[in-house]
Length: 298
Image 1 (cartoon, rainbow, N blue to C red):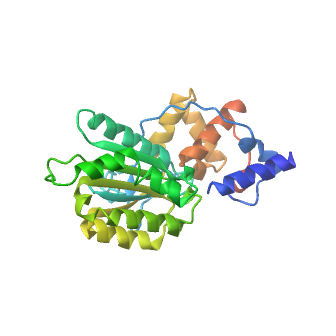
Image 2: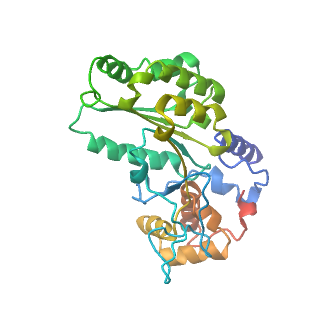
């Protein structure tokens, strides 16, 4: 059991997950057992904000719903935006803490975009950088890929209104096996070769905020233009989002939320990955959660 705990801790740390050193053996089953809550998407409306802006959590610990104003008309989170509101920005750096649901949120937006582009010549190039281990592999999967080559070949000699657009989604920059500075340099150098055609390119890069290469922002501004780069951070879940997830998994939401609150586990419930762990734990234990504070679980 001890070896299994150590292996699981090392795995989570390697993924940028939960490298907390106080993982107790009596709670290790929460992570060592595979969990199988439904793989369905919950159609949550996720919100983003500029890293320089603050967002408010309510007295109950959940994100204050920006769609709901208080009795006196006050909106506690006026700066939050949906992805739809920022989707016209050509280049987006999308940040998020581990477990916040970046990958799922970006996959959902990519899925919506695919539906919108169904009857167009635009293409989507999606690459999870977690699978990239060498510089050559990165170049082949990105700049030498059939989709990028088609876009590059078709972009010459055509007006911007006639060219097809290429929409690039790069997920898990922070999990790439290459040094982040190397990935950033390859990406920037490759895009510079097509600088005159970036008006027919959209780029979305997902990364953890703490490890984002500092050079990336300045270089992408130079390539796309200062007003064509946006940096946004994914914020936690609202109470209604947790309710929706619980209902989708056949869990009585009010009882679950009460148990989460009593056990001081709201900070885990507002992140999709740990919310799934909690729901699995709740179902397995007969509608109760481990009687431990958060530090005991990790």
